[in-house]
Amino acid sequence: MRLTVAYLPLLGSVCLAACFTQAPLAGPVPAPETRIVELVTDSGVLAMSNAIGPSATEVEGIVAGADATSWDLRLLRVEYRNGQSVPWNRELVRFPRSALSQATERRFSKGRSWIFAGLLTSTAFLAGRFLGVFGGGDNTDNQPPPPH
Image (cartoon, rainbow, N blue to C red; front, top):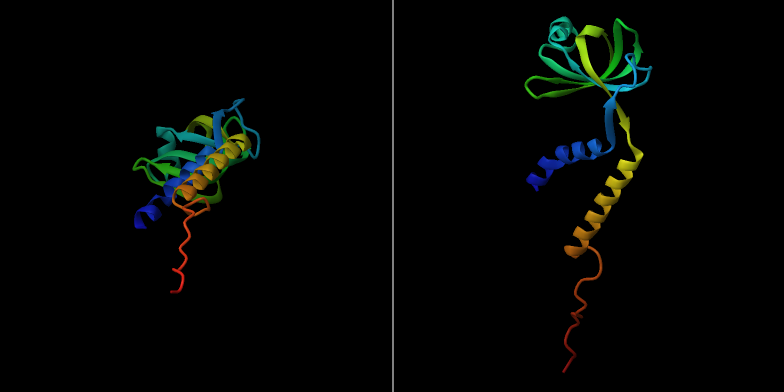
C-alpha cells in the first residue's frame, strides 16, 4: 500500500504532462495571459536571486505584461539546479528580458487529454475485470448441500 501511495505524485505529474503541449513562441513578445516556460540565464540567476531565490534554472508563469525590455510574469513554478521544483501562487515578478531565454508557450491540449482519459479508463476497467472486481468471474454456485 505504501508503494502505491509513493507513486501517486508521479502518476499525477504524468497525467498533467499528457494534457499540455509546448511550442516556441510565435513572436518576440508574448501576448498577455500566455502561459510560458523559460530558462533562466546565468546573468538572470544573479539579477533575480533576491526575487526567486538563488540557482533558479527555469520558470513557468502567465504573462501579465511584456515589452522588449522586461516581462511581468505571474509565476506558477520555479525549478532549481538541485532538481527541486517549487510551486508559486501566481505572484507577480518582473524579469529583465536578458534574464530569460528559450521561451516556449505551454497550452492545454483537449485532444491529448481525451486520449489519455480513454487509455486510463480502459486500463482501469481491464485491471478491475482481471482482478474480479467487475462481473464475469466464476459462475459456480456455492449453495449449501441439500438436507438429508
